[in-house]
Length: 436
Image 1: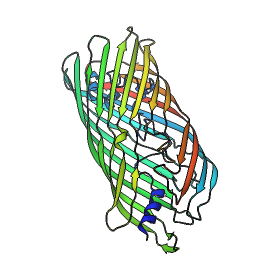
Image 2 (image 1 turned 90 degrees about the vertical axis):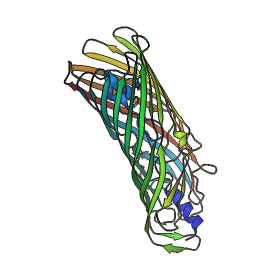
Image 3 (image 1 turned 30 degrees about the vertical axis):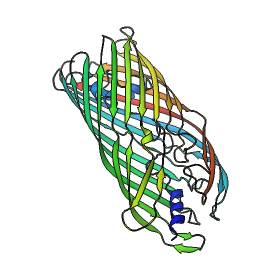
Image 4 (image 1 turned 180 degrees about the horizontal axis):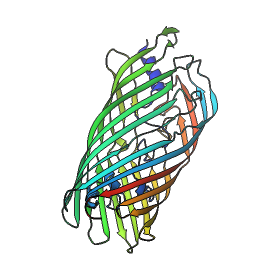
């Protein structure tokens, strides 16, 4: 089979190895929904200590805010995205690919994102903990027959991150913390195969376990004021999987070829994240907080896929993301001894712009509007509820000449996305042992 033509076909059917399309909620394919408590403030102040130890996801030093004994928290986020592409597709050189236009219907996939956190206060200075989270994921799944199926039929990513943590309270002003990340990442992508006249599906899938770390510090210069700085490292993955190719016809000779499955590997790395937060007590009942977050998405340049054996051509997968930024401001008010109300707003700069935006990942800058509450059931048990509405800016897709994903054999795809996201969160916090 002609190597250059085969590579072009693979590019059309495997545009991205680890990108998850649709409404992943931290820019790119990351998930910010790790806390029902901080969801209610659009994650303002999430790197400082507070009633919830879920802050250790962003800053492990905040574990030193845990109470006596053992603390357990269970957080759940229900993400309900709505995203529809109004598209126009013009076929390229492959004769059986037809031009088309229309709407995809809702391509977003609802998702439940769980997270759990545990902490144990060994003594007044030393704290240990464990979190289990899903930092990357979500998916899109347009109709299998939509006109842009040659660029995306479905995209799925699943992750689990286990993070043991140790925190040390140096004094009443300074605390530090660190941990180890153990991360599982699974990827599955499908597209119509350009060399199949019947638009059969080609699939790329793979998984891996990688390792990283996190570290942080909190500083309380005066009573009622706190600064927090947390860092989550990149996690290196060598995805081990398969490329499944349906039967097709070699162009322009018309020579048929059989379906095949080829083992592949691909080295990639999820981005590191730096979070800076501040919290200020205004009165005994009212506090304001803010967060600035930077994510090093620009480390995702080009990913080289390699066959495990043989000489089959596999494509280079081009990302070329920008860095991501997130800015949040919020506050909370203790209505009484049992009920606390909170609200927040945020603005996020997506790592993806129109130069690289694809049908797999129609991400864009977005506004966050959030509200939430906590209710203390008893001295050692509390419940949290949160809600966020996300409004993306006007989003365009233009996969044509000059776009990194454009395949002239497949054709040109232009589209506009109409999307929004609603997120509902709930968490349960319980502490036993020690003083209540």
